[in-house]
Image (tube, rainbow, N blue to C red; front, top):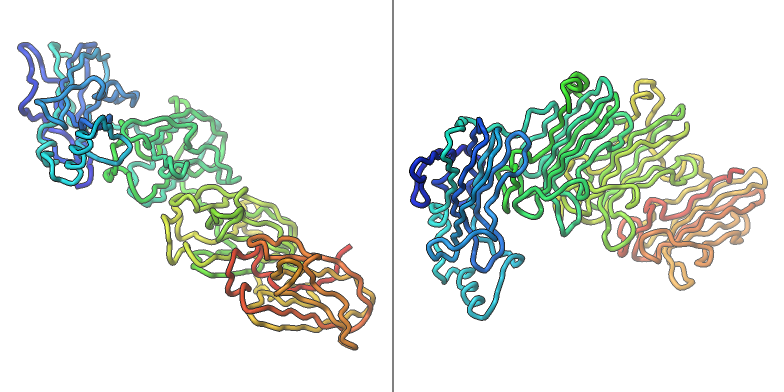
Length: 577
């Protein structure tokens, strides 16, 4: 069964019992495998207590798999836990450990927990001293030894808090973390939660978050953040460096900070991966399991008037939405800005971990010249949840008035239709969305158009060329004109295999040709080549040609594609001064 949080009854079992004159302050027993039980009590005056417990630790391991702990319900700080260094064998068992500790408890409220885990042999916490230990361990792992059943072990676990003072009261409910204005609490696996809030004035806030850190990926995989709704800046985010070990498994992390936020609108977010969350622990839970998630509350009563939850829409209605993108897609949409504007870009893609580029990504180009204005890359993106290769751009850029084309391209794996690893937390947004920021929304400054095969102002454009093609276009110059040639193709060792050239339509003379020495690397595989050159042509009629061989082209790359796959071909425009 999943490890659930349930109120513990005060049930006596065999083991340590109260001495004459002692009271049982709290007790947890009658446990089953994977149980996580809790009970609470109030200490009405400072008192001394004795904590007696039986837990679980394999004799070849240095880690407890079943143990109790005591938490201060008001501060959420650990008061006591069953430390394997101060335990000894219980009744000669290879799995059961017992301890007895004396504690001084201050006046306050306390929560007593017990996690009844199962023995785990993950290779990271095993101690082998000799061949006999190895043989015994192998028998346990293979089930041929004398290891008791998990249920039999769990029935022997217990913890009792005893005292000769009656300065305590039992509680029928467990307090848990203090109430918060913003609360993204106890999320399940594969969840993406968010809640908006408004600050009426500057105030101090306490941010309390618990989550999971992946040592293998070196990122938080269950974590929270706060975003400024207007600027899209992350004003706070839980990470490895502003958090500490939260108890239990090493991957459990907790962050508790006081931050100051100015007046404005904000959105708090929390995301989880596909395992190890509240009520679904795949390893030992943290000391404060109820804190899994994100909570935000004012520090003082005066600050309480400064914050209130609210519906904050992020983003505003998208003007362009290329989302839920599948494998081997190349999608484009055009838009026209009547005046300069701030645009919010929200894009999710895939990192190609074997190169310095993304495998699935978006970019914006000038519709007239084809020149790239903005591109999603490793440097301007951040982790998007799930597998570490999921990347996200979540910022605001400024564009001048003009015509633009938004592009999004994917490779042959890991996309919305077929994830080959854990997906990003916002799966449905895989792709790219553009929205006008609040100051420009509703002004009617954006119109959409269907992008042409090449730049709108091109004299000629042959783009996204496929295998074994020979394409041509005519263009005419009414006067001596300086033109710009932008061409991408395949080449290696001074030879070009996909390339273009320009001929005079009158006599067939070649006036320009794409050669390897004119090119530079176009991104992706080394053989992807790019030329961006300006030349002067006389008045007359011309034909631009482009040819490709039988492999590595716009519809079927046999190596990493270039940064701009759509530009595979040749584009002729009038050069601007």
